[in-house]
Amino acid sequence: MGPMTQALPRPDPAILAIADMIGDAVEAARFPQHILRWRNDRAAAAIGLEALDDAAWVAAFGQFEPLPGNLPRPLALRYHGHQFGSYNPDLGDGRGFLFAQFRDRDGRLIDLGTKGSGQTPYSRFGDGRLTLKGAVRELLATEMLAALGVETSATFSIIDTGEALHRGDEPSPTRSAVLVRQSHGHIRIGSFQRLAYLGETEAMERLLRYCLANYARVDAGQAQAMPVDEAAAMLVRFSAERCARMAASFMVAGFVHGVLNSDNINISGESFDYGPWRFTPEWDPAFVAAYFDHGGLYAFGRQPQVIHWDVGQLAVSLRTIAPAEPLVEALEAFAPAYEAAIAERFCWRLGVSGADAASDRALVLAAERFMVASGTRIDRFFIDWAGGRVAAGDETPERQALIAALAGREAVRGRWWEDTQPQSMDIEEVETIWAAIAEGDEWQPLNNKVAAIRAMGAALAA
Image (cartoon, rainbow, N blue to C red; front, side, top):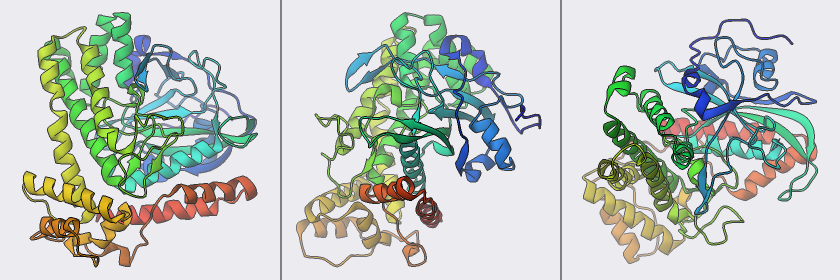
């Protein structure tokens, strides 16, 4: 299959302007098979790629033939990061790379990045591969999160690659896949940490201005011309506000990412990179997703605190080129942004109108306390009390406080579940969907689940 020659809409490999200091050109692995298992035409439509036929799709996203007008070679990105509180300078894209960049119809920069695409200079002792189960789990996570209003990367493509992999955390040998993500950028907090660690101040300033122009949507000329201390503070504030919204969205979705290391936090506040994720059935602050998170550092209830701390590492890194005071002031935007976002997201999922900040905060606290005291499942709570209606139950102080917090609010969404089946994402169902694939190569349960999640997402969005 030869290189793709048809013109594609809106390619924009903007990262080439900083490629020399942000990554390394690499080659994709060669796989024995290329069986297309998932193509996300909804995501592809945002960048004009939905019309590609399956052969062209596999050539681009399984064999990684360069796309016209785009990156000439994939770019494995360099970064450092704090992993479970300990600084690690031995990081980077070990089984992935940035493959292409586009502009969507709104002019936003869109990255297509990979997972499981082969070894890179940062693979260390890894094989650069991804299990098919890992790809299926990422698809389920991204679709469910998007339906629940979380800004997340999209699972763009999954191609079964026909290799047998050996892993210590699942029955082996297991099947392999290469996954492509669509996201609004792959610049991580750890990207800035690396430059600070190495003392590369000129590169730090170049990365800073690139991020302002391409993610904070600052006019390119203004991003280049503004004083560096003003630019640094602007990026910290932007990231703090966006990451605060991500943290709030996780909580309202009942989602536990599992590995909130600073190299897993995009400066744009878009969630990505799904490994040991789980949805907690109940509002349990101590619920942990990763079996190796023995101390509960990334437990459900600690996620806002941890994400705030991660954004703080961006401010610390930028201290190498800017004074501390404006950076600290910008970082303080996280707390009020989180309070506003969790109230907004709570009202949105509950389907009720917002009120003033104090009343909305009281509603969030009353709902949390009610769920803890009653043991009500999170997804059940948002249905039983949808639109501000009072659900049946025993008279308790927590129930009375919740009723009071809902009083006077208008319903802003109808009884969507009467026409659309509500969806949850318990780990048992994830395992059942995977078992059908692993044991019988049966993909229909996965396709049915994605369709049902999307139907729920459309109902909630309406």
